[in-house]
Image 1 (tube, rainbow, N blue to C red):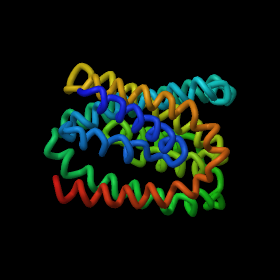
Image 2: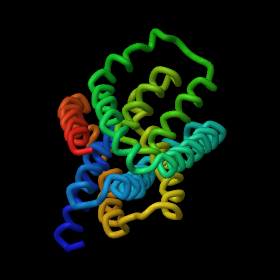
Image 3: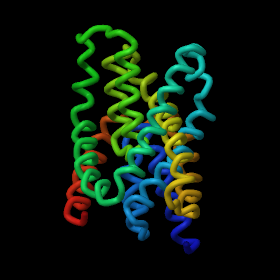
Image 4: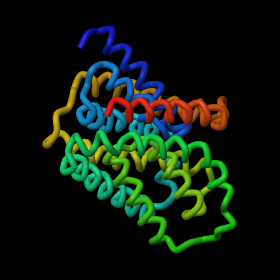
Length: 248
């Protein structure tokens, strides 16, 4: 990898960390960049999963105390579910193979983009009332499995799940989503390291940028309304889904 491409991926990582925290769609920034530098789909995906752990590290360094303040039992249970989901998603990717992956990804990206558009309405549906905590944990597990498998839009799905099923407000859900999805990404990444090719230079460059983006994101959230970012990223997601389908 040339120094220019390395620096470019660092910048992409900063953007991915910011977009991932604010809009829940880091992979819609980072994944196409990895494809653009020549990585095949599955290698790009596993490299992306490994790199995006950096965003969670950055956010944890900035706001980890707020996350831990929710209570030790709550934290341990949710982290355990995220780890299990990430491992399951990583195993699923390795077992299904690249041909299945290439066929499924466009639909995942499209659904993620559409979820981003409708997420404000979903998050306003708190009239659904409280639900048993196991329901939330099962939904969290399913989201983290998806996050370990591919992950585009997993943050948006988690935000909807958290607000609708856990009763947490939007600000708290953004923080918890970022850290728990980083946990599931870490679990999947550890699985990938021993089973699947990883482009380590690309992962390092993207990961360094993600650490910076994840660290800056809580402050940026106070300056840029999330609603401004949502339609732009959603449109990019739809375009990416179409491109992936045409070139599958």
